[in-house]
Each structure stands twice: as structure tokens, then as C-alpha cells.
Length: 240
Ligand SMILES: *Cc1c(COP(=O)(O)O)cnc(C)c1O
Image 1 (cartoon, rainbow, N blue to C red):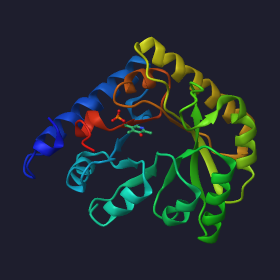
Image 2 (image 1 turned 180 degrees about the vertical axis):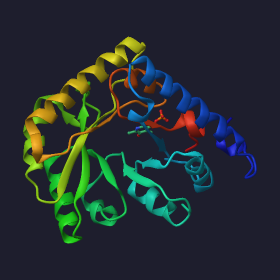
Image 3 (image 1 turned 135 degrees about the vertical axis):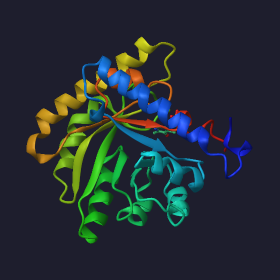
């Protein structure tokens, strides 16, 4: 069912979706020999109205992700439930100052220049910005994210910045026909994540591996994801 067909009173589809996603995520964690608590669920809320978002938060999805600064800003006053907010879409440097004190994490850091601006704005506001580096794990030309071959040098440079704290990696792998294909990219990302823990050492706090969306969150959990970003399986098909 699409959102546009629903009246304000009919939110039970959200309860069902939330239950299904959390059950599947927990089952995947157990299959991987992991505790279900070791995987956080993010509700991806792009195009979703605050009415639905608030309900989803009440159900237990206390972490939300938005792609666009403007969309997040427009919704803030209507989000009545307390929640953690992450930016997960491509971020332009000139938008950083608008959200630096609003968001809890920026998951989509894909350049040294963006990280510099984040550090500058964080310092001005007396905060430390928590970030993930986004890696273009399929090395696809049309995609954002750091190319794998410059990930290490970029991470080392960003780790020196005074007001950012690198918390880990985020990826959006190429669209795969098979679960095995997706798992291959997730495994590759996990290897980069483990490497990063080693070479950054105590210059960072690398413990977040953000991978998996509606179509592949179970595969991602099987490969070690600690944070899955789920939109359409929770809220229904997006209506732009
Ligand atoms: C939209 C989006 C998601 C969620 O996508 P679904 O397929 O709807 O679950 C996750 N991560 C990023 C970066 C996104 O842009």
C-alpha cells in the first residue's frame, strides 16, 4: 500500500512493517551467530511525512536518516518524538553549518574538503562531529563515496582534524541480482572496516558499519553490518 492511499487514522501498516523488519533483522543476526542487539535499525524517512515518522519512532525506531538537509529542516518542528538523526545523502559543504548542531551523525562524508568544513563548523559550535566515511564499494563512476583505493589515505588525513570523530564506514553497493552478489560487496566493506580499526587506532572510534537497505539488509547483517538503513520496507513505496 502506498502512503498516499492512507488516512491519518490508519497507521497499523506501520506496526506490521516494523514487526516484520525487526523480526527478520533479528533472525539474520542469530543466523550469523550475533546478538540481535548488535544491529541498529535506522528508519530512512526521505519523502515520508512526520505523521508516519513519529509513529515509527513510537514503535521503537528511534534512529532516523534523511538524505537532504532541507527536507530534514522542514520536518524538524513536526517531529514530536525524541530521536537520533543522521544525514545519509550526499552533503554539500555550504549546507554543513545549517545542520552541524542538529544531527547526531553525518554518514556520507566522501571528501577531505567536506570533512574540513564539518570540522570547522563543529569547532565553531564547540562540538565534535561524529562521521562515517562513505565508500564507493563497487567503484561505480556514477556514485558518490570515496574510491576504495584512496580510502586509507583519506581516513588518515580526516582523523587528524580537530573536531571530527570517525566512527566507521557506510556503503551503498551496486544493485545485485543475487544475494551472493550483495554479500560479496558487504564482505569487502567489512574487510575495509576492520583494516580501518587497525590503522586509525586511537585516533578514531571505529565501531559503526552502516550497510544494508530494504532489499538486502539481511545479507548485510550476515556480513557484519551494525546499522541497517531501511526505508520502503518500513514506510511503503516512496511517493516523490
Ligand atoms: C533511500 C536510502 C536508503 C533506504 O532505501 P530503501 O531501499 O527504501 O530501504 C538507505 N540508504 C541510503 C543512503 C538511501 O539514500
